[in-house]
Length: 363
Image 1 (cartoon, rainbow, N blue to C red):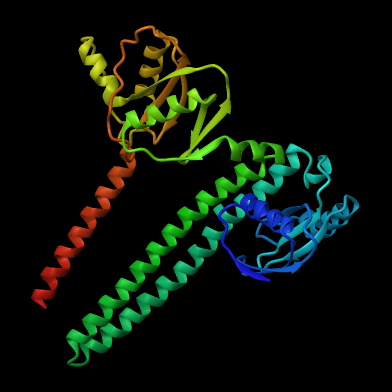
Image 2: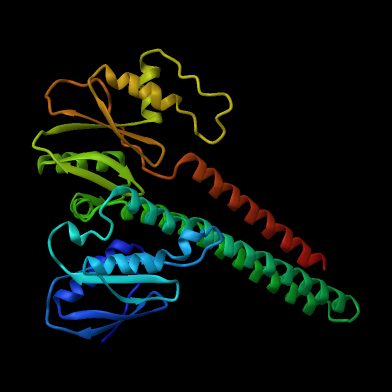
C-alpha cells in the first residue's frame, strides 16, 4: 500500500507510523519524504524512531562512522532499519516492549545531539544552500536583463524589451520572496523539531495531552479560555508559537491579562507617568514588563507567560478578593516590530507601483 502524507513534525510522523502498525501496515520504503510504502502484517504494536546520517559541511571523522555504529548498537536492542529517504533520514522500527528499550536515545545528552543535528539541517544548511542558489539566480537574471536591454537599444522593439525586462524582474522578485519565506519556515521547523526531539516518549505524550494551539481576537476571550481550563483542573504554565501549555492542577486560579495600553491607563489614573526607553525603536525594551510585574507583585499575581511580545498573563489562587486592575479588552494583534515591517513593505510596494506607473507613461 502506498500513502502520500506531509509532516511538519518528526514526532507526529512517528506517531502516525506506529498507528499504521496497529492497523496492520509496516513501513518498507520512503520517497521524497512524503511517499510511504507499506506491507501488510498482522496488527501489532511497533515503535519507530528517526535519525539522520549524512555528510555536512561541519562533519567530523566521528560523524563518518556514526551510521555504522548506530545501526550496530540499535540491533543489539532489537531495532531494525525499515528504510531511509533521499535526505538520509533513517527509519528504525522494533516491537513495542513498553519499557526503557523503546527509547532510541535513553539519555538527555544524546537526544540533544540528535535534535541539534536536525536544527542545524533546517536552520543553517538549508538556508545556506538557498543563499547559494539565490546568488546564482541573481547573476543569471542580471546577465539576461543586460542582454535584453542591449538588444532592445539596438532594435526598434523598445516596448517588447521593456515588457520582457519587467517580467524577468517580476520572476526574480517572486524567487527572492520564495527564498525568504522558505528560510522563515525552515527556521520555525528547526526550532520546533529541536524542542520535540529533546523529549522522551513520556514527555511527548504529556505535551500532546496538555497543549493546545489557539488564537484569540480579544484579550477577554483569552482570559475566558484560561478561566474555563482552570475549571476543568488545568493550570496554564506557558506559551510558545501559538501553543498554550497546561498541567493538571486541582487548584483553581484567577487569571489577569496585562498589556502596555492597560498599564499606561492604570498609571495615568494613579497620576504616574511612564517614561519609555529613548532608543527603543523596535519595542525590545523590558521596561514596561518590569513595571507591570512589579505592580502585579503587590496583589500576589504570578507572571506565567508573554504572548506575542505584547501581552503578559498572570495568575493567582482563586479568590473573591477585589483586584483594582481592569481587564482590558484590546485586540490581540501583531507585535510592534511586525507591524512596522508590514507597513514598511506596503510603503515600498506603493512607491514601486507609483514609479512604475509614471515610467510607463513617460516611455
